[in-house]
Length: 146
Length: 98
Image (cartoon, one colour):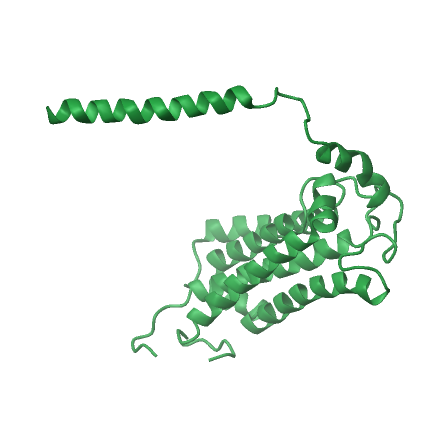
């Protein structure tokens, strides 16, 4: 795929930063407003897919390569488990939240213990996972099958 | 003859289904009543125990953390499966894994 027409490219150029920002907002405020890690991550993935469709696969792969996507996806998934295990390390149980993590002031971004952390890791995992999947789906079958 | 039998069968099935639906609908608790205290427990205690305004998020990542961890594992497994399936397809690009 080499990308689409000038109209689509211009609209994508205007919309993509806004969509990316809204995805980050939904992720960071997941414990305050409707939304959360998965929803924000899907928004980020939608931005990636829009860029991929408008500018082509090669253009996006220069910025976020397949290897980077796989790595960040794995780190996100591993950090979810690690954030849960931290409670075990400090002598509590798996998924211990308040007591290990800070309580904060309810209503602020850095509050509610480990919930923002979980949301961030989940968003990274989901966004890059969908990106990796779409990279795979845009591949074409090349002649001989292996 | 055959058509009549089919009609009778259809009416029979619909009648049995409607009977069960009405029985179940009659036995449902009234709208707005909370026969089980779990939902009220979450609404009352989330702010003290977790400190989050979004009760849904608190249930997802605190009270029912194992469930969400399993969902994440399912997504991870699905993506790994996709990557594994498309491993041999290169399209002339350097993905660094083929």
